[in-house]
Length: 142
Image (cartoon, rainbow, N blue to C red; front, side):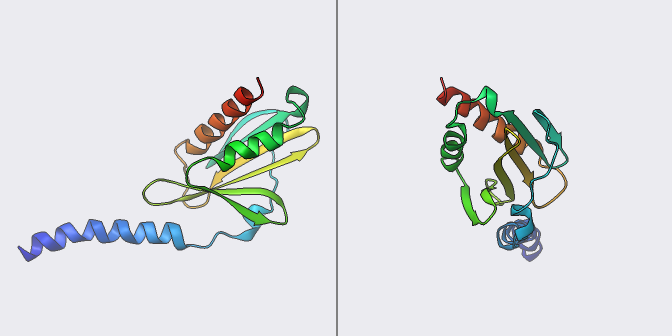
């Protein structure tokens, strides 16, 4: 009976440790300061994330504020106060893995860069999330 309890307790302990690691590991402040490429218009799939570069000529003047409103309403997403502009952390359900999103204006484009913090693959969740934000932004502009 003790062996069964130990075998059952091990996965629970491992999952708890992983969740604590994901939630308590500090995020390097430099991740909120970067404005990485690519800089040409389009949707760019990157290792562990995605970058949308949307020409402002295709968007109304209030597109940034509307996008920020959409992002702020996203579940498990919190805004991070930085001197570098609009930064957000979105945590996954369950374990709470953090993903960082940076949003900025540069060279007549709206840039949205979302990427994981822990691991090597985000399984497309950043691409899906930013795609939903883009759809909501475009719907709000109609």
